[in-house]
Image: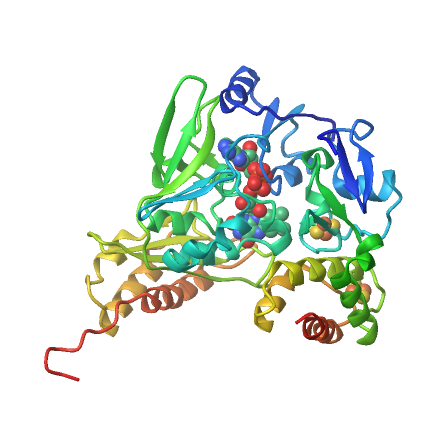
Length: 285
Length: 156
Ligand SMILES: Cc1cc2nc3c(=O)[nH]c(=O)nc-3n(C[C@H](O)[C@H](O)[C@H](O)COP(=O)(O)OP(=O)(O)OC[C@H]3O[C@@H](n4cnc5c(N)ncnc54)[C@H](O)[C@@H]3O)c2cc1C
Ligand code: FES
Ligand code: FES
């Protein structure tokens, strides 16, 4: 393949290295599960890989209801965290959907965001959680909401010399991620649907993967759902709207028509699974 | 043990002699002669190349050797020295969970890592789910599933 490896231990040093390099000359290496196949296939031809392995970003920490995950923490450690499982189940489910166990022992959240694939299993859930991407650069740091971070298929707002340091999820939410694939493991989702229930309006967040050109929230469908447990008719209406409006296309994994069929079912399933219980009226046992 | 080496099956291996763009799979098979680890797809899809890195199942085809300074790598060649690895091997033999055998090292190593990673109380469906990254084109999986069940019973 013909590249050398550089592994700085200071974020600023890593950013400076990136900033100094000509476009295409250097690629960032986190878990390598996207970048090594790209290099092998000749889709990128860097002469150097910038390894993030020595940077202090393999972290996961709670601050009250808010969770910050370091960009280079292996995905497996996110789904294995008891707090994540209990308080943001949709995130644990989405992470679990990625590849296989051996892949998740190395692949990272930063890599998934850096890749910004329209088929990512992680972007939909991050959208429903209003996740914020924390970036470091040579001179300054900034934070970008995930819906602004990914601008198109495989394209982000990362500037030259910038790296993803961490991802913050401001509020733990009841959440669910459901997907459909040909094979359950090591396959790419044809459609992925994430749903979460927020503490303030809009109370429902629904986001999709497997759409073009990038994962999006379905705000129209969200608005059809009430703050309380949706009626079956409301659920059906939101699912039908999702099936009508979602920007699907036909590709080698599935036809557009099949995806439309699927998305309605998945939206119903995801929302129903995290609907609050019906509160019995006063006086009813 | 320093950052300039990697321990493979208990033996220190200097990184200085390994090119920086070499994958662990190639280091193992072609530099160290450990041909038990198999290359099925070289793209992360089949699990034939799974080894343990500090006890965790890892795709050696998608891992650069130089990314693992100071790590301990266990391949199929030394799995029987691990008590759980021994049990897993015995279970594969007892169930005849092998036809051509190409996928077997990956299955044995992955299951050994999994049984050690999950608590003994982990339900069988979880075990089977986590083993889905390993593909077999011969057995039809029946005998492999029986071997997983047997190894799980023997390690509980
Ligand atoms: C067999 C297989 C199955 C897969 N299945 C799935 C799946 O089911 N669902 C899914 O969503 N994905 C899947 N993927 C894709 C991939 O595993 C994920 O996108 C993974 O999260 C990438 O993380 P990584 O650390 O390996 O990224 P890397 O390959 O290391 O990096 C990916 C990209 O992000 C950039 N990058 C990495 N870290 C940073 C950072 N901190 N700051 C800035 N840029 C950065 C890199 O430059 C590179 O362009 C699969 C891949 C394979 C090979
Ligand atoms: S050779 Fe590594 S997963 Fe197939
Ligand atoms: S026994 Fe031949 S691939 Fe599994």
